[in-house]
Image (cartoon, rainbow, N blue to C red):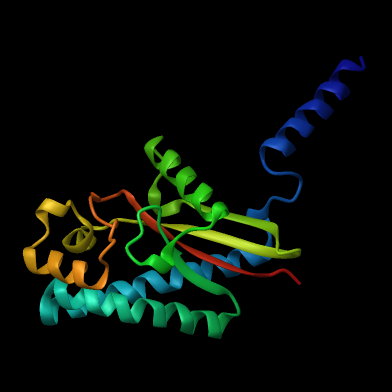
Length: 194
């Protein structure tokens, strides 16, 4: 008769370990706040890029992305208290190099997307110790959309003027060769835990 309680305890412990413990990070209130911050920037940037493309083509959008994306991240950081930036395993901007936690998360996003998960829903939230301090970290995947291909598609399909502009602004550019639905990178945000 003792088998049922022992089996229940073992099953509960196994499920807790698989799901990240009794209080999963995804259930924490700070995660909803982080998700809101991370998801607020991409639509604003896409709107700016669409307007720039309509006005002066992809070449103009590249310049806008180079200047306005960092400004948007800085403004969001100042307004929210979260440190906000974009990272990629194939970075275009040399400031977008992921740290070890971010690189592992991006690799996990790629694996999960390849296994059939929707790139639109890929996220990771975790409280970690960073430089000796408890820190909230959150990442949200940025999947490639049709609009992105004009600057991030296969190198051979880029217009010569686009390739020239990319080369001028980003001589070590790795951010090409994508197709729709692949993960271009991620929004990554963090702030000290209280």
